Length: 169
Image (cartoon, rainbow, N blue to C red; front, side, top):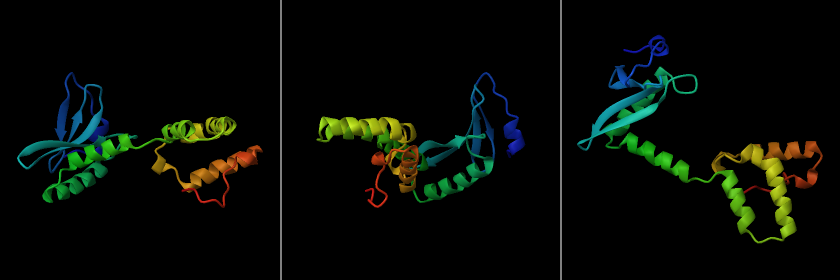
């Protein structure tokens, strides 16, 4: 069984290798030293591998991986493939638009006077792009927009501000 101390002291080797934890959970250690939590299982006569994530400060802990394993086992018992569910979720995220893409499409595709388009492009480039460009649309909250509007007013450009009374749908 693995411990956090053991995980912190793992060293890479010439080839990728595995270290077992419990209940089928294991870590795969790459030649670069990346440690990933994984689980192999069979469903409908197919072997599948589910990768939970990387271990470390920017990743998940051993306890989190063990909890994720229990959730995955529940799905498998119900006849669902957690690895395929994860792949579908990733595909949906890749297909989802980022604010920057949406903004560029809006500025190109909507009918408006050139002076209006130039003004909106300027506002986007100066006040919105640095903060929202790479964020997914569903990640931007009303509070985020209000915060940007407040910063614009504080800067002394209230004409650019989105009205706080207007609903942002």
